[in-house]
Image (tube, rainbow, N blue to C red):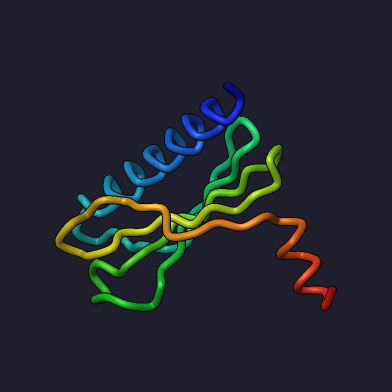
Length: 102
């Protein structure tokens, strides 16, 4: 049950961030930059991948689950498709241990 609640919460945050990013693109002078927000133990951060045109860069969504200590990365597979998919994920303690050379 807790796993289902976590998945639902992560999905809700991902959809909220996607809605904010897309709403920002409605204005012709909107600039897609890095944005972050935190709600209910989750932190969501968007960032450009460095690909795509300047007017519509390709972005990814990083979601950090503070309670579950995990990082999830969502993105759009193709510009035409416009659906967010889970690109990958990892345990934060493992990432930090590897970064420290352990």
